[in-house]
Image 1 (tube, rainbow, N blue to C red):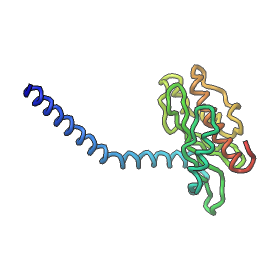
Image 2 (image 1 turned 135 degrees about the vertical axis):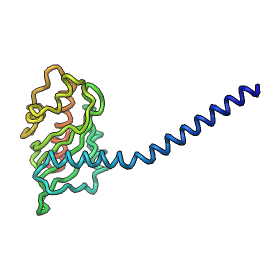
Image 3 (image 1 turned 120 degrees about the vertical axis):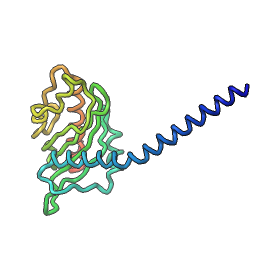
Image 4 (image 1 turned 45 degrees about the horizontal axis):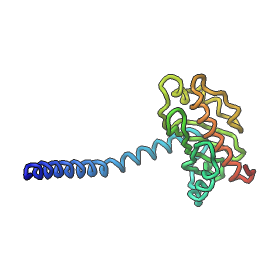
Length: 187
């Protein structure tokens, strides 16, 4: 019986040491990883709204997004919205981080939409779509289809990637509709 207790104690100590080591490494790397992700998002925002001099957070963003996301029925979540402003501080439009489910979960887009609800920029922040068809969501010819639209139904799908295409359209439409709601056009 004492051999079983001894082996159990050894296994417990090894597990505890491994857990503490893993927790320590996580605490060391969490900050730099979060900062790298934030930098990637900032760069994506600048790409999708190149005319903007800066981006400003909305004071009521959390409430706005919670209320808006509760109305969405397409499996899309708007995770962030910021106001795009020019060098004089004039509002140009908005940038969004939007997450949806294509073939695989977490197809994340950065979208720039002007105050009229017209898409001015589109960039894939991250995706796990299939290497052949779904990964085409990041191709320049696919991105170009989104520029200048006011309704995501105007976009042709990616042949062979129906779920990815649907996610791209749903995410884009969610951003367009939110701009219309914020600018008073209702939706």
